[in-house]
Image (cartoon, rainbow, N blue to C red; front, side):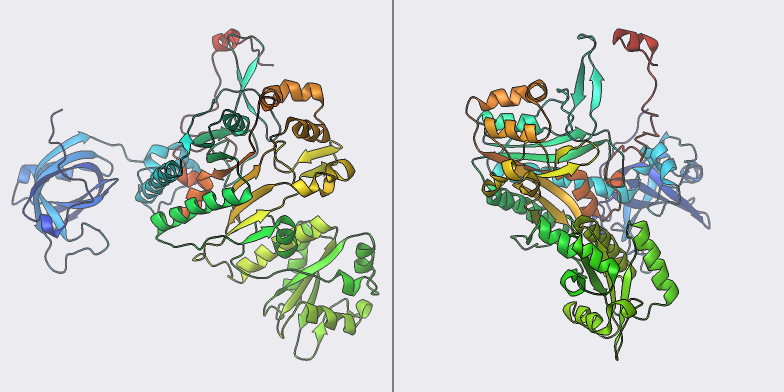
Amino acid sequence: MRYNKRTHTCGELRASDAGKHVTLTGWVDFQRDLGGVIFIVVRDRYGKTQVVFNPQNNSQLHQQAAGLRSEDVISVSGKVNNRPDGMINPNMPTGEIDITAEELTILTKADVPPFAVTDDVNASEELRLQYRYLDLRRPALQKNFLTRHQMYQITRKYYDELNFIEIETPILMKSTPEGARDYLVPSRVHHGKFYALPQSPQTYKQLLMVAGMDRYFQIVKCFRDEDLRADRQPEFTQIDVEMSFVDEEDIYQVTEGLMKRFFKEIKGIDVQIPFPRLTYKEAIETYGSDKPDTRFDLKFTNVSELVQDSGFKVFADVVKKGGVVAGFVAPQCANYSRSQLDLLTDLAKKMGAGGLVWMKVTADSVESPIEKFIGKEVLLSIKNKMQANVGDLILLISDYWMKTYTILGNLRLEIGKRLNLLDDSKNNLLWVTDFPMFEYDENEKRYIAVHHPFTSPKLEDLGLLDSDPSKARARAYDLVLNGNEIAGGSIRIHDRTLQSKVFTLLGIDEEHAKKKFGFLLEAFRFGAPPHGGIAYGFDRICMLMTGEKSIRDVIAFPKTTSAMSLMDESPSEVDEAQLKELHIKIV
């Protein structure tokens, strides 16, 4: 089919182009017939332009335009005209002009789409994912992918300026399941053996440091066979970074530089560096989360000392057993009714709390159902320590350390949403540091790595690996934006003896360590530099930069929360012949 090739995109013509003869190509966005004159809006990823078909100019062309429907693909040529006063559309960048049609070629006729290709689409996400190629025509989604493209370019330019080199690492690798489940790939050549898709390039980037590459980065696909959420996918993208001869300060500085550039070049915002820092302990005891949303206050106060000898047995017993009584002030919520407080208590119980203690601060006193057990004097002491004002509501939880603060953290977010305290105009970035090295898994009866097995302990805590590993802190750090973890990393172990010791503490014996990580331990024999790095959740950062609520809106062809691709119906069954080649039998 012969047709005129475009001279301009659908987003670039302005009043200064009046008088030009142009050709546009794209999709019919919509058609309107106003008293015989037909208006067609043509759309491509650059924008939209209105085209006018007047029967007095060309009746045959007008009749052809009457048959156009949404999503038909056309080539249209004509003259650019300035719109009359009162007809200008200020909501369209091309709204000052339209094109008087002189030629029209229908390149493809489209069936009626299953949903309207508009930003205010009223279709379910399942339907939109089934017809993802139509969903991706929507200007809002196309804008998201322009932002994603911009982030790619900024990342590569930034790290290149800092002397990093981009190196690809293998997608087919050895299975080392020390985190989420691996996706396994059977080998046709080596019967009964499998590759794994990388959960991250962790061991490879450490080997690149051993190889003397000094500064490496990669925008890389990673794969994890785990339960999904709005901000999680089975395949995802991360910016992977590793540096030799560095400490935490070097990692912070380089990372903050990239984030500053993202915000400046994409959103026009100057973020202040260095970012604030909280230790893991401070984050948990202040906000109840290792990824705290600091856009609003509602900080926690520990009142254990005030209630440990009180007559309220629930509090006293918890403190006696080494637990914590803590809470926060919900500002100007003392007017909550009893039914509202009961619903809040039920919510706390659903979060895992045994109960919720509340106290209303009035002009005359502090009101609480536990007053008869604890006494007015203790209530006043709690009110004073928590700096509560008249009209405030005090909420308290008691349990062991982590459980208390985790429940309070969830409750804090709930109250923050109810009181509209989450300010979307803020961009609060902070580091969380000094994570625990290990946590004890009651089911497996062993320590597991909080970060990963290659994370170095803090040098001052090395002795704790022998005496009390549970108290050892890691040289690990996470970057948080508005309550979302967007990057995480650590200074790595580069000493073979220390790495073997950590494996032992994790219940990985010498034989298992050699089988899974022998290549890394072997490499350390030949001179490994001190090194560390970080990995950014690229999809998550893109989601936050575009203001979306799900990473599915910034991934071209995402999976559902059950890891299905509705568009191409994967995963799918394969031919029996393929299975036979791989020596696999479905049971």
